[in-house]
Amino acid sequence: MKPTILKTKEIIDKGIETNTIDNNLSYNIKLDITNGIDAKFQTPLTKELDKQFEILTDDKLADLKAFVKEKLQVLIKKSGFQKGLLGEEKAKTHIVTIMKVNKPLVADAGTPFKEEDRGSFRIIIKLKPITEELTFKEELDKLMDRMGVTDADVELILNNRK
Image (cartoon, rainbow, N blue to C red; front, side, top):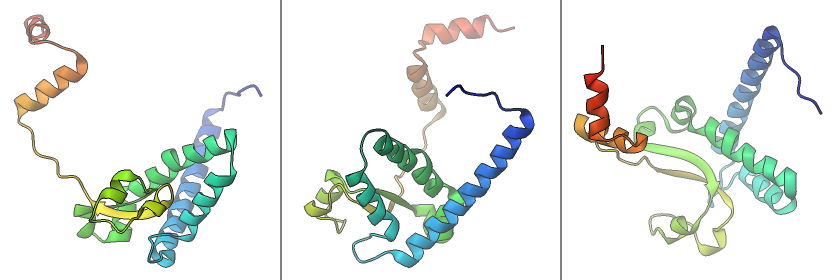
């Protein structure tokens, strides 16, 4: 199928339609988590994800993986979603996500997950990682490393500024 170029009005219309769909998804995911979570941190959605991951293959499985990574987890990460589930205060220190139980989660004594839970989707509430404040020099060093820039490069750039 040959891709078509959308006209500007169509782009706006598709954007509005996408926002409506995303809002509806967010609302239903919140309902699923708040009303459907069980003692094993599963919901109807996580159970269906497990089922679909078992039966789908090839392109359909790839599409589902992309949906989980690029849409589901992104919607859940949004600040408004987090505050809506956890409340304003708890959302400052904790994060809710849907993810597959992995080896580190099983090994962590602070989680309720066992080996038989590995590979299944669960609702996970965890502490946000504590990020330490870096000094200006530390931030600059980090940026220079990431960009592959040396002190000499920076000096050359600064000397050639107009």
